Amino acid sequence: MPPAVLDVSQKPMLAKLVRELPRGDFLYEPKWDGFRCIAFRDGDDVDLRSRHGRPLGRYFPELVAAVGAAAPARFVLDGEVLVLRDGRFDFASLMARLHPAATRVRELANRTPAIFVAFDLLAAGDADLRARPFEERRRRLLELFGAAAPPLFVTPATEDVDVAAQWLERFRGGGLDGVVAKPRHGRYEGGARAMLKVKHERTADCVVAGIRTSSDDPTEVTSLMLGLYDDDGRLEHIGVASGFSRATRTRLGRELGPLATSIDGHPWEHGFLLGGGPMGRLKGAAGRWRPGMTMDWVPLAPERVAEVAYTQLDDHRLRHPAKLVRWRADRDPASCRLDQLDEPAAAPAQVLAT
Image (tube, rainbow, N blue to C red; front, side):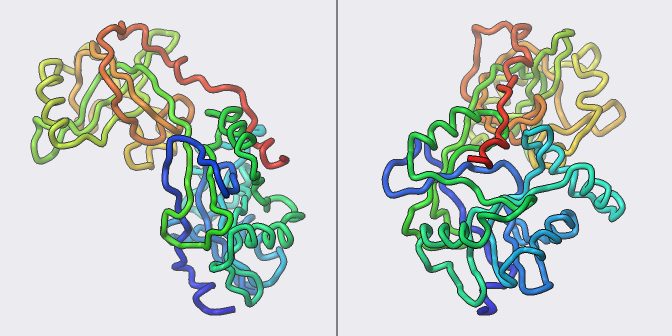
């Protein structure tokens, strides 16, 4: 096999975000909600690499073993690492698998084993397939791995845009991240956005109960701290909205500055997200705070309501920063409740059987 094919610096092909499913000469696949992974096998040597080239094999020994036992003896697969719990994909459990202690890694491999869903074949035997049309790579993928045993799977695909639309709707909020459209005749372009993706986007009306400001200019707001009330009337911190332009940061500072208040009597005076969790490791995810920790945020009187758009959600917490859509002067903050984030009881693992 050419050395370049087995080079672990190989970058995965990426997708450009579009608003609607494209029609035309495409094959459609579910967009999996896990860790992107390129799996390299050369005889007894197996290497799993993340989207950014970081080694993943030490965290997923069960997948290293499965890839090492698959045929042929030399191949490169592009796919996604996922964890299934009770028939649903569980991103929090997947994040928890990234543990530094070897004993804990072995324990988690038994408790929450991972699966690998392959969706492209970059090389097989001595053949570099990256310049071949995707429909040919897909056919070879099915020939070699279509009958593979768990934890290895091949992603379902369809040429029917209506089926893809059903996936997008049926499993909305249930653990899948959307749908990917791949040009039938496209070559594999590592690092390029040569595919198209449609992602779920939902909105929620949230209480803005705090802000974070720029370290260079405290009059500029860099993020809004969002909250929703639970059934007991507690304001739960669910995440942040950010990504503002310089002009918007300045405007938000002028608008929200008068709402700054003391932590005494504030809904979060005793802390928030004290249970922590793996989502706090993600850049922009809601992290915990308790009295005594550095006060890196400014409490606001919980009077303003913002409509925000978000994509992925984990147990009533936003995985990534939301986008500010508009202010909702017509909404009573007390009416902004966690049940806005309730998801349908979908079982997206069923997609693997389609």
